[in-house]
Image: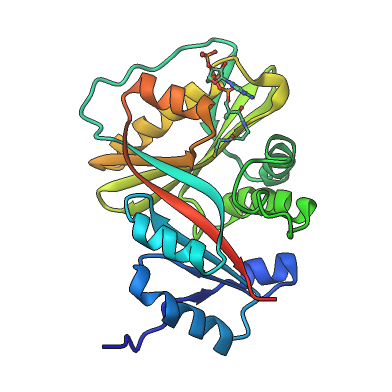
Length: 246
Ligand SMILES: CC(C)(COP(=O)(O)OP(=O)(O)OC[C@H]1O[C@@H](n2cnc3c(N)ncnc32)[C@H](O)[C@@H]1OP(=O)(O)O)[C@@H](O)C(=O)NCCC(=O)NCCS
């Protein structure tokens, strides 16, 4: 039986940024691929971003047969918040909530730290690299000014200067998510990311949540090292494919 609801979602954010009609699809299996493609043709979609669980190799292989190209692999980790949480102390670094007027600083930090990042946008040779960088800078900025993007934004202050930020989201009453974290290249390697991660755990506990989740590209070893050290464990992973319709 055919599904009557749409299994693609048009992405106006991506269309405005790249000037390309873009749709996204997830939570589907291989037998729905013909319907997904049909919806793309009907809607004159130029770029489809499709995500499927790595466990579902049949779907991944069907996507490959249809000309989809692999762009990244996302890994998800979870912390059940019951473990004892240690807070790393560093008297030189202060982690605090962002203050009004600091959104532009966060935007500039994201521009610096995410330049050439290894996400699925940057992996697509057909997308302009500067516009790919802007995915992260505008996401970071929007997170500071709108609760639609983040419920909390933390910053790290070193010698009176903001050198990093972390955005946190409430997914549901039981689940918090660490979304977008970044540390200025000049301040990397000082343990600031670890302090942000521990602060995110404390924030989730204070919200009364049962778990905190985080995700990243499988190639981002720096953050996964920190997650393992503070008690996160891996839960799932997803392939991100792009298909162009030109
Ligand atoms: C990933 C990132 C947040 C790490 O921040 P950080 O404050 O330097 O991290 P920490 O000091 O807590 O160090 C964590 C580990 O990662 C390593 N590390 C830090 N920066 C690294 C880099 N650029 N490349 C490789 N490893 C790095 C550290 O050496 C440390 O490992 P070690 O203890 O075995 O030496 C920072 O490099 C960054 O902003 N990168 C770009 C954006 C990004 O990847 N954000 C996260 C995904 S949303």
